[in-house]
Amino acid sequence: MVTEQLNLFMELNLYLFVENFLFFLIATLLIVAINWGWKDTKPYTLPLPFPGWYKIWFGSVQLLGVLLPLVFMLLWGVWWGDRTVLTVLGWYFIVLGLQIISERVTLRQLQNVVWVMVPYIYLPYRFWQLYEGLTILDSQSELLWVRYLLIFELVLWIVSYAIDVSQLPRLFRWEVQSNSDVS
Image (tube, rainbow, N blue to C red; front, side, top):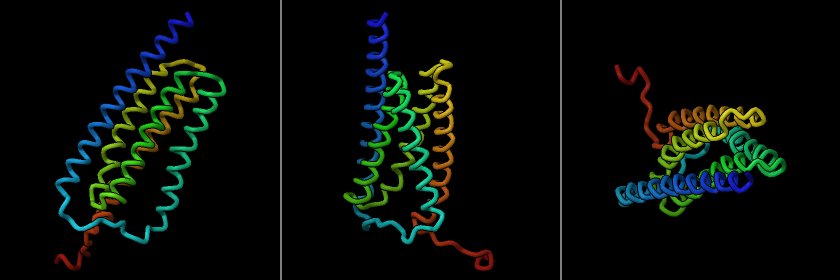
Protein backbone atom coordinates (compact mmCIF):
# COMPACT_ATOMS: atom_id res chain seq x y z
CA MET A 1 0.00 0.00 0.00
CA VAL A 2 2.75 2.47 0.96
CA THR A 3 4.80 1.47 -2.10
CA GLU A 4 1.77 1.97 -4.35
CA GLN A 5 1.16 5.46 -2.90
CA LEU A 6 4.83 6.32 -3.33
CA ASN A 7 4.69 5.19 -6.97
CA LEU A 8 1.59 7.33 -7.61
CA PHE A 9 3.29 10.28 -5.94
CA MET A 10 6.41 9.81 -8.09
CA GLU A 11 4.32 9.48 -11.27
CA LEU A 12 2.41 12.66 -10.41
CA ASN A 13 5.64 14.57 -9.80
CA LEU A 14 7.20 13.28 -13.00
CA TYR A 15 4.09 14.28 -14.96
CA LEU A 16 4.05 17.76 -13.37
CA PHE A 17 7.80 18.14 -13.90
CA VAL A 18 7.46 17.39 -17.61
CA GLU A 19 4.38 19.63 -17.96
CA ASN A 20 5.96 22.56 -16.14
CA PHE A 21 9.31 22.13 -17.89
CA LEU A 22 7.61 22.15 -21.30
CA PHE A 23 5.67 25.27 -20.35
CA PHE A 24 8.83 27.01 -19.15
CA LEU A 25 10.70 25.99 -22.30
CA ILE A 26 7.93 27.26 -24.60
CA ALA A 27 7.49 30.48 -22.56
CA THR A 28 11.23 31.16 -22.60
CA LEU A 29 11.50 30.48 -26.34
CA LEU A 30 8.57 32.82 -26.95
CA ILE A 31 10.18 35.54 -24.83
CA VAL A 32 13.52 35.07 -26.64
CA ALA A 33 11.82 35.20 -30.06
CA ILE A 34 9.84 38.33 -29.20
CA ASN A 35 12.92 39.91 -27.64
CA TRP A 36 14.78 39.29 -30.89
CA GLY A 37 11.97 41.04 -32.79
CA TRP A 38 12.23 44.05 -30.48
CA LYS A 39 16.05 44.11 -30.29
CA ASP A 40 16.40 47.43 -32.12
CA THR A 41 14.03 49.40 -29.90
CA LYS A 42 15.16 51.88 -27.31
CA PRO A 43 15.62 50.52 -23.76
CA TYR A 44 12.40 50.16 -21.78
CA THR A 45 12.04 51.75 -18.36
CA LEU A 46 9.11 51.52 -16.01
CA PRO A 47 6.84 54.55 -16.06
CA LEU A 48 7.37 56.18 -12.68
CA PRO A 49 5.98 57.13 -10.27
CA PHE A 50 3.62 54.24 -9.67
CA PRO A 51 0.01 55.18 -8.91
CA GLY A 52 -0.86 55.25 -5.20
CA TRP A 53 -3.18 52.24 -5.46
CA TYR A 54 -0.37 50.16 -7.03
CA LYS A 55 1.38 49.55 -3.71
CA ILE A 56 -1.86 48.28 -2.18
CA TRP A 57 -2.56 45.99 -5.15
CA PHE A 58 1.02 44.71 -5.37
CA GLY A 59 1.23 44.15 -1.62
CA SER A 60 -2.11 42.33 -1.61
CA VAL A 61 -1.02 40.03 -4.43
CA GLN A 62 2.22 39.25 -2.61
CA LEU A 63 0.44 38.61 0.66
CA LEU A 64 -2.48 36.62 -0.74
CA GLY A 65 -0.72 35.03 -3.73
CA VAL A 66 2.56 34.10 -2.04
CA LEU A 67 2.37 34.20 1.74
CA LEU A 68 -1.07 32.58 2.11
CA PRO A 69 -0.26 29.57 -0.14
CA LEU A 70 3.09 29.24 1.62
CA VAL A 71 1.32 28.95 4.98
CA PHE A 72 -1.00 26.30 3.53
CA MET A 73 1.91 24.40 1.99
CA LEU A 74 3.82 24.44 5.27
CA LEU A 75 0.79 23.38 7.32
CA TRP A 76 -0.80 20.73 5.11
CA GLY A 77 2.24 19.71 3.07
CA VAL A 78 5.03 19.78 5.62
CA TRP A 79 3.52 19.82 9.12
CA TRP A 80 0.68 17.35 8.41
CA GLY A 81 2.69 15.53 5.73
CA ASP A 82 0.26 15.54 2.80
CA ARG A 83 2.46 14.91 -0.22
CA THR A 84 -0.24 15.85 -2.71
CA VAL A 85 -0.62 19.35 -1.24
CA LEU A 86 3.16 19.68 -1.15
CA THR A 87 3.32 18.67 -4.82
CA VAL A 88 0.55 20.97 -6.03
CA LEU A 89 1.75 24.03 -4.12
CA GLY A 90 5.41 23.19 -4.66
CA TRP A 91 5.01 23.35 -8.44
CA TYR A 92 2.91 26.51 -8.04
CA PHE A 93 5.86 28.18 -6.27
CA ILE A 94 8.43 26.86 -8.74
CA VAL A 95 6.58 28.37 -11.71
CA LEU A 96 5.88 31.58 -9.77
CA GLY A 97 9.62 31.81 -9.07
CA LEU A 98 10.41 31.25 -12.75
CA GLN A 99 7.98 34.05 -13.64
CA ILE A 100 9.70 36.44 -11.24
CA ILE A 101 13.11 35.50 -12.65
CA SER A 102 11.82 35.99 -16.22
CA GLU A 103 10.41 39.40 -15.31
CA ARG A 104 13.69 40.50 -13.69
CA VAL A 105 15.80 39.28 -16.61
CA THR A 106 13.60 40.90 -19.24
CA LEU A 107 13.34 44.21 -17.39
CA ARG A 108 16.90 44.56 -16.11
CA GLN A 109 19.01 42.61 -18.60
CA LEU A 110 17.12 42.81 -21.91
CA GLN A 111 15.67 46.25 -21.07
CA ASN A 112 12.95 46.20 -23.67
CA VAL A 113 9.19 46.08 -23.80
CA VAL A 114 9.13 42.26 -23.82
CA TRP A 115 9.01 42.58 -20.02
CA VAL A 116 5.39 43.69 -20.23
CA MET A 117 4.30 40.41 -21.85
CA VAL A 118 5.81 38.03 -19.25
CA PRO A 119 2.73 38.08 -16.96
CA TYR A 120 0.49 37.55 -20.01
CA ILE A 121 2.31 34.29 -20.67
CA TYR A 122 2.62 33.07 -17.08
CA LEU A 123 -0.75 34.03 -15.56
CA PRO A 124 -2.93 31.92 -17.90
CA TYR A 125 -0.67 28.99 -17.11
CA ARG A 126 -1.12 29.71 -13.40
CA PHE A 127 -4.89 29.53 -13.95
CA TRP A 128 -4.30 26.08 -15.44
CA GLN A 129 -2.05 25.06 -12.54
CA LEU A 130 -4.67 26.03 -9.98
CA TYR A 131 -7.45 24.28 -11.87
CA GLU A 132 -5.27 21.20 -12.26
CA GLY A 133 -4.47 21.35 -8.54
CA LEU A 134 -8.21 21.25 -7.81
CA THR A 135 -8.59 18.14 -9.97
CA ILE A 136 -5.54 16.49 -8.39
CA LEU A 137 -6.80 17.11 -4.86
CA ASP A 138 -10.19 15.78 -5.97
CA SER A 139 -12.84 16.00 -3.26
CA GLN A 140 -10.91 14.76 -0.25
CA SER A 141 -12.79 16.18 2.73
CA GLU A 142 -9.63 16.64 4.81
CA LEU A 143 -8.28 18.95 2.10
CA LEU A 144 -11.38 21.13 1.78
CA TRP A 145 -9.54 24.24 3.00
CA VAL A 146 -6.74 23.65 0.52
CA ARG A 147 -9.33 23.41 -2.26
CA TYR A 148 -10.86 26.69 -1.03
CA LEU A 149 -7.38 28.21 -1.17
CA LEU A 150 -6.91 27.08 -4.78
CA ILE A 151 -10.29 28.55 -5.76
CA PHE A 152 -9.42 31.80 -3.96
CA GLU A 153 -6.02 31.91 -5.70
CA LEU A 154 -7.66 31.33 -9.07
CA VAL A 155 -9.97 34.30 -8.51
CA LEU A 156 -7.09 36.42 -7.17
CA TRP A 157 -4.90 35.78 -10.21
CA ILE A 158 -7.75 36.36 -12.66
CA VAL A 159 -8.40 39.75 -11.01
CA SER A 160 -4.67 40.45 -11.10
CA TYR A 161 -4.64 39.60 -14.81
CA ALA A 162 -7.50 42.04 -15.42
CA ILE A 163 -5.63 44.75 -13.53
CA ASP A 164 -2.50 44.00 -15.59
CA VAL A 165 -4.49 44.39 -18.81
CA SER A 166 -5.96 47.68 -17.59
CA GLN A 167 -2.42 49.00 -17.10
CA LEU A 168 -1.27 48.40 -20.69
CA PRO A 169 -1.86 52.02 -21.79
CA ARG A 170 0.24 53.26 -18.87
CA LEU A 171 3.00 50.70 -19.40
CA PHE A 172 3.22 51.55 -23.10
CA ARG A 173 2.87 55.27 -22.34
CA TRP A 174 -0.07 55.69 -24.68
CA GLU A 175 -1.32 59.22 -24.75
CA VAL A 176 -4.89 59.76 -23.65
CA GLN A 177 -7.07 62.18 -25.58
CA SER A 178 -9.97 63.93 -23.92
CA ASN A 179 -13.37 63.94 -25.60
CA SER A 180 -13.06 67.67 -26.30
CA ASP A 181 -9.88 67.02 -28.33
CA VAL A 182 -11.67 64.52 -30.59
CA SER A 183 -14.52 66.81 -31.74
